[in-house]
Image (cartoon, rainbow, N blue to C red):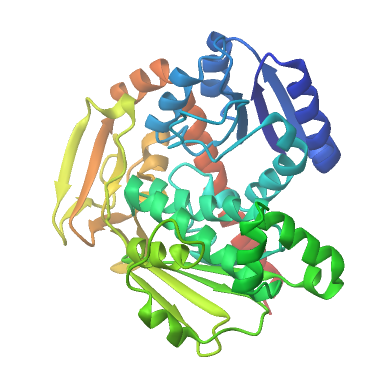
Length: 423
């Protein structure tokens, strides 16, 4: 089930959103519409929708106060936020997945939601990628309007995980969009530099030329660009491969300085500036972009900012098996080993969000020993502090319940798989 909320007073926009999403997702969509700021705050904290579309121009919605609150709360920042605006200027888009004009909604919105609803691990608070792995790929059609969605998805994931800063996020997004466009334009659509130059000098849009190419030749239309991601602790790598003939990459050696007014070369030049490494395969139809992580710490949720911040050195014990489970630990940074009978059975980090939540909620003793694998930081939350936080921020309780349900669901799937394969 996809929970989608729209914060808007414009009936035309509301009807357009509802119609296009219902056509795409049918009964799998739960749709809510709200038009007053106080109701929106209540809805966000209690319902925690998967996606929201917010009218950035409506003063009654108060987007300028709602969006920063979503961005600053680690457990709300995982909501997929899409903005709609008629002006398309003067917006700080740090926590908005995409901004579109009303006329773009029908064509773009269903596709954006389809991408994200198929990759919900990227939207979960803390990005719980431990369950789903940190590698994967997307097969993308030759449609420029959807390239930015994939780039934003990956750049936002790294930012939400605390692996990069906001400047790096924008640099990664720019680089991915530029290289994906090159793959579509020059790779799959075989648009030469001369053809592109002539087209642009006539005042045309390159997107229109790509569309013409695809309509004229079904073989071109059928080609795809494959975007593969590999997110590691120290770095991330993104490989973009097209189905074109490739090009002579040795020509890029002379691309050292370029005027920003030139029609060609700016994308590659700026990508080299933003990324730690840019490499091509021998054929020239595949490029790999690598970024070194900054390892910024997770944000401390507002409700825990008065709780005790603990620092651990590598090898220090957080708690032992059979200790009282009277505290909940929120993971800020570092890795932690879970040890049972002298065996390390799991390694947790900030993507796991909490340590010791089951014993804490049940009032039981610890079932395992937890030891810091690296230098690390935790926030220690007592029962009194937890209750106070939930009273002030009710969505904390909702989030923890969903987190536990997800972990239990993952464990159940693992048990079922073992049962099926049992000899």
